[in-house]
Structures are given as structure tokens and as C-alpha cells.
Length: 194
Image (cartoon, rainbow, N blue to C red; front, side, top):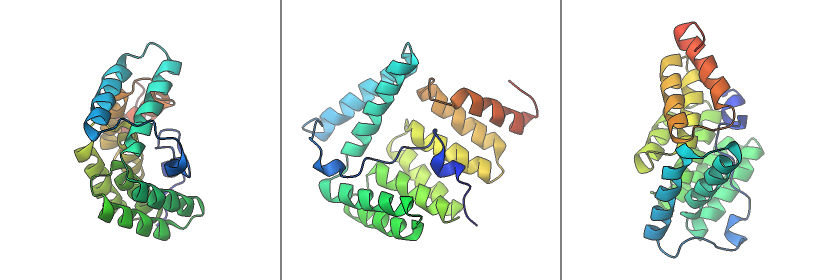
């Protein structure tokens, strides 16, 4: 069973990392602790962003920090896996993400991307397992929560899809498309509008 295009194409899902991310200048903090502190500051600021532009800028910085946590070798594997996903070669992408996780088991981006590739292949159980691992490593990963919501919806679980999306919006209230998505999920779960 193939996943609906919504899971990978939605504005609520994680944008694929830029190809060649390892070759770009490295603005990351010098130590993982500094990166974690910066990430926590940005995640703390995100819910109170005063407008959509600032919220989007904060979210982009957060996504960048998540991506920068990958080692150079893992970044190359993630880039190749994303190319495979774009080429509709999800099985090859899963192999790339598997290899990335062997090298760096705490890489949230590798878990998230592998979840998307597994969902594309129709293996929703494995995709859910990977998304839960992302959320274990990074409980405030709003992109993972949005992907989880989409997957739960595809599996016919409107109530859990609504809860996951509500959690994502609590972290990133100005997430593009979130308000409309919440209304749709509320109607699906409860049969009426908010």
C-alpha cells in the first residue's frame, strides 16, 4: 500500500534538507552542548513569535540546527537518501537512512527521513516506530509531530491525528496550514467544526 502524497508533500511535513548541506559554510555552534542550548532557546521562543515571518525564521533556524547535528558522513547519506526519495526510490532511501543510523543512532533527521521513506513504501508500523524515536530524542520536534499526525490520519485514527497536530501547534502555533488542518481533523474526530 502506497502512502498518499500528502504525507511527503504537505507543507506541514519536514522540508527535505538542502542537497550538499555538508559543503555549505558551517555556522553551527562549536559543541553539541552549545547547539542544544541554542536549540532550546529557539524552541522556547517559537510559541510566542509575534508574527508569521518571525515564526517562520525561528522554525527555519530550528530545522537547521536539527540538520547540523548530523556528522559529515551522515549528512552525505541523508542527502543521497533524499535524492532517492525525490526519485521515488523509497527502498533505496531507507537503505541510506539505515546506514546513517548505524553511524549516528541519535540523529533525529535520519529517523524522521526514514519514517517518511517507510511511509512512502506503505510500512506505516515501522514509520510510526521511527517517528516515536524522533520524539524520544527530541520531544519538541514539531515537524515529526505533523508527520505523525498525517500518518495517523491516513491510518484512520482521526483522534490521535488531532492530538498529534495539537501538540505540534502548541510548539509552533504559527505553523503554515496548521489552523485549517486542525479544523479538518476536529471535524473528522468529532463530526463538527471547532
